[in-house]
Amino acid sequence: MVSFYKSTDFLSLAKLFNNFKEIDHESRAKEVVGRYIGHRSSLFLTRVLEAQHNSQGITSDEFKFCPCVWDTGASYGLTPFRSDFIDYEEVHIEVQDIAHTNVVIGVGTVMWKMKATNGQTLYLPLLAYHLREADIRLLSPQTYHQLHGGSSHLVDQGSLVEMKLPQHGPGQPEHLLHIPIDVRNTNLPIVYDVWCTDRERKTIGPHLRSALVKQPLSFQEGFHTARSAAKTACRRSKLGFPRSWNCATSNFDYEFSAFQQMCCPCVGDDANINLSGPQRELLLWHWKLGCSMKCVQQLMVEHKVVDANNETVIFPQVIKPKFATTSSCPIPLCTSCELAQAKKRNPGVIKQHSVKEREGILAAGVHEVGDMVSTDQFIVKTPGRLPTGFGREQSQNRYHGGTIFNDAHSGIIWVENQVSLGAGETIEAKLRFEEWLYDLAFAEVKHYRSDNGVFTAEEFRA
Image (cartoon, rainbow, N blue to C red; front, side):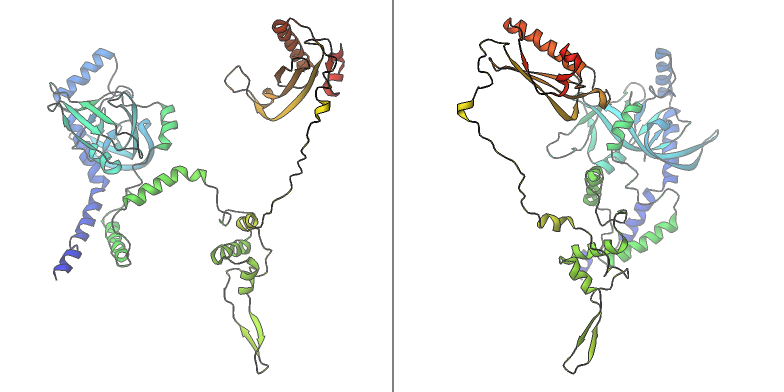
């Protein structure tokens, strides 16, 4: 009996319903808007906003100068700006105020920028509601820590809030945020300049974890959905599935989604239009059984045999295919089988050894630098960047080869990169080589040796 009490959680259903109540966005939105109204109607906060208006010549409604209140009493964040969000879901939640009715029109993940104690700029993904009538931002630290980890506490005799952010990976440091408390006026932790530019949201936003993916219910579902989800959770519990949210699984899904673009799609996927349905099924059975696809096709057909009494017996199919033509379809290629059957091929490379007696025969009779220069051109299939500019030139305007000059007497080599291998650029390369050789060795080129190609052009011989 004692072991039964210890192994059974009698409050599991109540805890499950309690979790569903925590994500009831209608009640939470009303609570957050109420917190905002309390802050906004505060006399001290109004003075702060008015002082900001008088000193900077702007209103707090403007995007860049709207303050952010670090509020532990808010269930979720709040912002009046649609531009703060990196993902967004439209909702319609009416919140009654004393004078008028406020409407929360959206919920999603906002990206706010803050400075760490080491001077590094950090971008925090936070769950927040969208209320156009608001003129301050609210940050819910407990929501951030529940989704991403970390902790917060008071330091420096209650004048600062220290927000400790979790590590981004093994070996990565923990970042600290110090949020000052306005002790003399509002007695609230307030952060300024949390806004992000459009470029920051486009470049950094896709790499941040969405705060909406861990919400198990949609925003329009009510108690009947929670009750049906509870029944489903009970059935899954009997089958051995976990009833609670698995943090490790969620983190793996998030990390995998960030790198899944690097993985190649599977050949057996339904989106592969190069394989028919029967071929795809045959390939999947081949991977599962590990035998040849010819054997798999034999297992998909009936076989007639004659027993000892000369009676015909029909053996049924071992594998019943989904498609009728799987047993006779053309056999597709398997990458693993092709790699396993690969054999070493002769690359056709011929090794040549120089004859010592004929070494330097081309330089015979050459006594000074410039007496004879050998030249030839080379082609590069990958276009190369120009030394000027920012690499934004078109492919046809990049380097596609060049000309090599080799002095027979000294053995020095000069390489000129060229966009075009025509006669015009080749002549310019020749002039630069001759100028360099004259400045270096005070020598002039007397004779060139080359193959035909561009060197037979009239411009080159002129």
